[in-house]
Length: 544
Ligand SMILES: [Cu+2]
Image 1 (cartoon, rainbow, N blue to C red):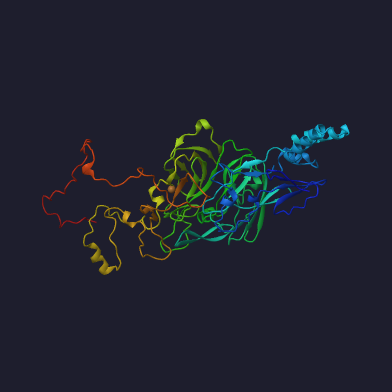
Image 2: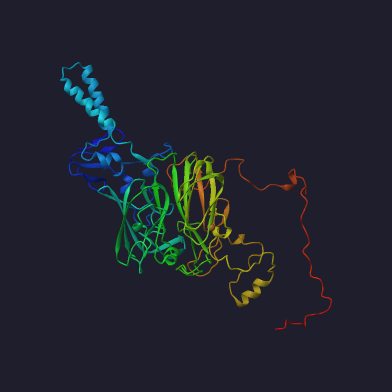
C-alpha cells in the first residue's frame, strides 16, 4: 500500500516492495517501511557526463519558484525513526487530514455510528499529528564542470562507492592531462549528506600504488581518519576498504588521500564532502562548490609534474582553466553560496566583481554572524575550505577569479624575459633568420597574446583566451563569470549580458569633454641618463 498526498510525499506501508533504486527499504523485523527517496539521490551520474543535479528538470520552473529544494526523508538517526520501530510510520498529512475530515463529516451527517469508531478516528489522528518531523530540506550543491556522487541505502546507511583511478582530464579544449582522481572525475565527485546520517564509503583502489582516504575536517573515530600507517593499513591496488561513521556536524569538508600525498594530490585526488545541516537557517537558492588546483605542465607535456613545489603554470577551478570553466548561473534576487577548497601549495585570494559577500564558514564550521566581515576577496589558504554567501541583486556578467595575477593566466607566460618597454624594432627579422616563426613580443605588454595561437607544441592553449561580446578576454586559469539574469529558463548558459542603454562604458571625443587639465601634480621624472665615462674604461675587464 502506498499513500500519495497532494504534495507527492510518498510513504510507507506494511507491504511495500519498492525496489532500492526508487526508495530505501528498512527491515525493522515487524514491519517494513519505505520512504520516498527523492529522485535526486538515485541519479546514477555517469562519469564526465556533464550532467548536473540542478539541471532544469530537477529544479522545476526556476524562473517562477524562488527555491525548489529537495525534500529529504528523515534519516535513520532521526529519533522518530529509530524509536518508532514497528510503529506505523506515515506522514500525518496523508492520514490526519482525511481522518479529521471524515470525523466531522460523520458527525455532520448525523449518521448513527458507534461512538467508538468516532473516537477511533480521533485517536488515530492524534499520534499521527505528532508523527514524523518535517522532512529535511536542502538545496543540492552544484559542482561546476563536475558531478555529485550517488548513493544507495543499506538498512539506514547511505553507501557511497569511491573508485581511485587514473583519469584523463580536459582542462580546456585543446589541453588534456593525465591526472589521478575518483570515479572518472577530477576533482572527485562531490559527496553530499546530512548531519546525523550514518554513511559508509567503499573505496576501491585501481591505482598502480597504495592509497587511503582521509575525511578532512570530519569528526569521526580515529580508525576512520584515513592516514595510512597511523589509522589503518594502506589500501593496496585492487583492494576495497570500507569506512563507516555517523556525521555529527555540518559544513564544507574535503576528502583526499593520506598515502604518497605529494604525488596523489598533485595529480588531482581530492573532492568535496559537504554535510548539510538538519535545517538550513538561511534560505540558499544556488550552492556552488569549486576546488582550487594548480599544475606544473611544461608546454607540450600531458603529465603534470608532481614533484613541483612552486613552478606551477596552470591554475584551475574544478580542474578546468578559462575558457574551459563553466559560468555560475544565477537568477536576480537569489541567495548564492560558493564553497571554495584548496589543497595546493599556494593560497588563492578569490575575488568577485559586482558584489560584496560575507564569509560564512570554514572547514572548522560556521562563522558567527558577528564575525562575518564584508569582503570582495576571500583568501583560501592551503588545507582549508572557505564558504561565502551573497544576494545576487544586480544582473550582469561578473568576473570571479583568483586575484594572484598569474593564477588567472594559462601556460607560457611565466618564464619569458621582461621585454616591457624594450624596443624590438628590426629584431624579429634578424632572429627569424635563425629561428623561423620567431615573434617579438612584450614591448607594450602581453595583451596582444590574448587568444593568439602561438603555433607551439601540441597540448598547449593560449595563456589568455576566450572571446567575449566586446572582444578577446585577456584571462585564463582560475577565472569564470557569475552570470546573473532577471529571467532564466533553466541553469544553462544564457549567453552574454546585454548592457541596458546608457550603462556601458564607451569611447568618447576627449576634446568635447569637460575636464580639468593636470589638476593632480605630475610625478613624471626623467630617467637618469648614463653619464659619458670620464675616460675610456672599455679595455678594463673584471679580474677573476
Ligand atoms: Cu590563485
